[in-house]
Image 1 (cartoon, protein in one colour):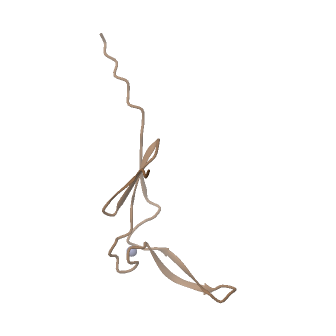
Image 2: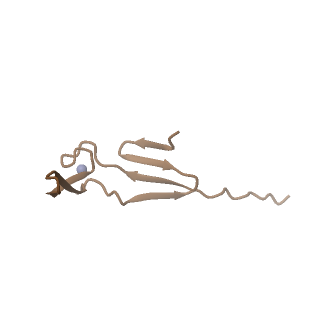
Image 3: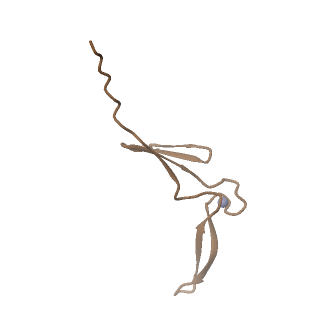
Length: 80
Ligand SMILES: [Zn+2]
């Protein structure tokens, strides 16, 4: 069972102690095409295959997350 939902560019994941919400890459981004990474050069590795280097696309910030802690509901104490 998955404890995550997606609403447009936003993804929310539910854990036992917190909800994490993060923004996903723009689906129609002209730079990354929705993958969230752009190729910035690369190098040929030992077996002569091209290993591209990539970095996050400017359309999103993969390190920005909203964390909503889940606390126990405060006990309501009635005075009578
Ligand atoms: Zn992008």
